[in-house]
Image 1 (cartoon, rainbow, N blue to C red):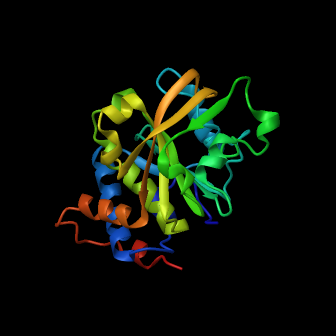
Image 2: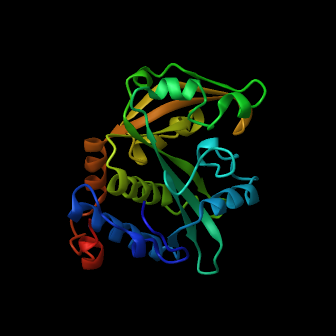
Image 3: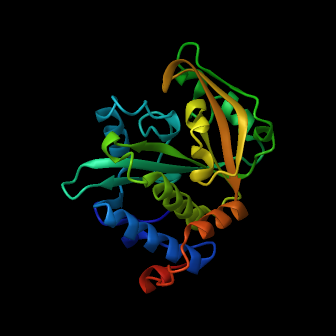
Length: 258
């Protein structure tokens, strides 16, 4: 577990425990620069604040998956983190989060369909009619420590600012430096997949389907894809997003390692 300070820039808490140190240091510095050019400061935040921001912005953001709901989904500092992007006035204009699951002895498909992915006690906590149907082929073969990346939101005023090419790479890189999982994955709604968002946010594979039925996210059925990348594919994605001129490395970030 990493100690975190809140309201500071996220770079104050970056610790590179795993992976290519130079690449990650350059990535974090470049991402921070791009955000600052847009008047945004990215910070770690208490997990409770993620839920509060979600509820305040229900007009533009669906309810959180229980995966990232600190009240009833088992989301805790021991297994996850969240990032909030703020303007100079303190307004939160974007969010991301990540959570690690240990799927040793089981599979992503089994944990998802049993709703153990969502709730500590699925039988007691599931909503009436709630179920998830998983037909994505790789879901049954994904096992071991796995990162779920999500809780993605951009305020409508920020949706032309190119944040989808910045925040996801920072979140994924942070999770890799902490947990070094072989697989990073998420769910993505059909309309978002059709917009070409998956490869832009670092996912090399799009598989159908994950059908979320009567979940807290939305009534009815949300037809989604399983999107995922392995460790090597993420490194390639990070490398491709760094321009050749990004040669300056923050020495504090570079040497803040285990």
